[in-house]
Image (cartoon, rainbow over all chains, first blue to last red; front, side):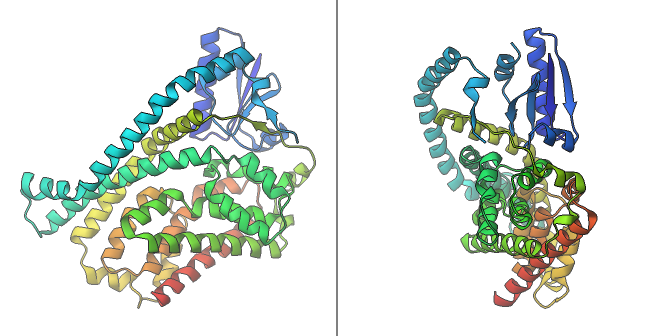
Length: 76
Length: 363
């Protein structure tokens, strides 16, 4: 499984990254968590507000920090 | 661009409805708690001034009327007052913001033309959640959705410039007239500056890779929110924002307390008074690269005004500090060519200088 965390690296994006990593660890799934910082790359995913989370190519949330239990639902 | 319901993508149906039932149970308790806290808030807020005097002059036995005493009392009164106001405002705004998202704002502005679009964009700039690091994706989204460049700029100027925290703190510390002046002029600068940038037809000064995005479609994820969810967002905003800005507030009040107690009145009047014609542009030039939280700058503003600085000069300083900042300019450089950034700074800067002079003349 591949999880992309999109954001330029501000506080909310860092928080999202931590939440996603915690969810992956809690669920014990094998997943690569990738940071996407480049605006161009983010825009090409169709994402125009950050932070955003993409799981296996599917955009799960944009413009907010997700809760850990939400992320756990996405990666089950 | 059909909005996707996130329940399709995220939670399975039984889990979702279970969550709703649980939340309904908490709603009563949460509601009563919120009301109780509001009542307590009012009682404490109304007793802050006598309490700070008691602390300073009776308990700490600082001499009344001394410079040190003035500074200490100012600090002990303003810190809890500003922090309490801030907490309440951030909570209410957090709830209000749950009704607005960048996606919705973008969809709304996409159909607008200039002029009316500039006005709407400036107003939406106040209520749409925004931080300077989300400026670039937001800009890309607007360009891609076909929002005119000038309208986009009206939004980008208003969002940081008319800051709800600054607005309510101005109201709390300096009264509704100053707060209203700040709101109206902030909106006007955003509207006019955006309109001017639109008239100049500078689309070619956007970076090339951005232009190529114009095709394609933006993704929209809508979430259904219940009232407990919204109150939750308000609480989260308090934890998040108050937890982050309290340092700025205390530092701002400390600077304010120092000015209040020690800086002689004639001194400020000579540098930032009405008669010093050069003070408005100087305040703006000093303020542009500075970056401070709006909540931190307002106590300083209060103290400066108390020492005879002219309102226009002080407001111009405040606006340039919060509306234009070096970090935001650097991040916008990724999507705007240097010439467009220069135009942006000059247009907004002149708007602020003009406002400063206007206030100094009429008040």
